[in-house]
Image (cartoon, helix red, strand yellow):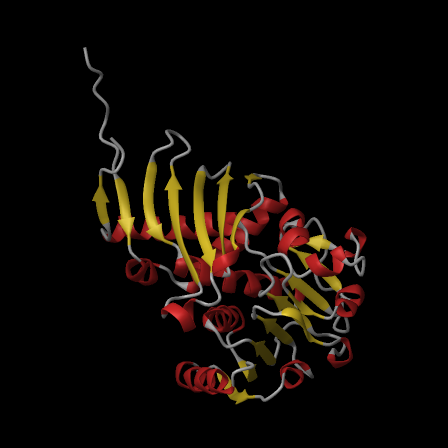
Length: 340
């Protein structure tokens, strides 16, 4: 006698479909919610597991998570291959995600998560800036003019509405100029002036918020440039050995990370920790603790604040749930029986 099983169907969502389904304002809400749940200890989220493809200058990370009181669970697989654009004409970062039913283990959806990764990473900076930057920031500096710079800009504009000035720097001047032209077109109503600057220092000095989103392995922001009141979102350091900030800045700042295990292994603090230039005691809070109200954010206008982002699986999880719910509502995607 054979047992009859219910049909297990999985919604397939392409990158183009996910892009249409996600709105940055909603993503900011999902990311803030993700941080809050982690801060309150309501999330299962093991640290990222890495595979290193050294002969191809790349790596792969797996990122599982479960938000217990929302019953939302997902696993993301994401690569970082810096040589891809030049050598293969492909993106540096690509990702897929499986949204899982905690009730049955059913794969509810299989989706491109490249745009999810971009959006939630931008969202993390915007939410961190909400709690750590000075109110009504006027000048934004962006170091690194790759894909992530675009979603950083989108998220910060969505959060704050307007900047008087945005300064962009990249080691490749053509990339800088191209992104500046793009920002001028897209945000002409929301940004007073967009400037291409020829050195990183010009993106830092007198900026209210500075975003670093490069693949650097040595500091590109120096301590003597940093004036009281600046807030930094450090995005680029997401693997061992990567570093964008002078450790002296981290020592004198109110230093916030997203997760100790991930940040100490592969975030902005990983190199100075390994060299004993920084200790665990120098870390003031996790962003989830700040968002949940368990620890303070910015205390005054003179404080230097730093947010070190490694990217949390729970951010992907709740952002993917946004896309899934919208897809169901709008009848987008293809339902397939993958599992027998």
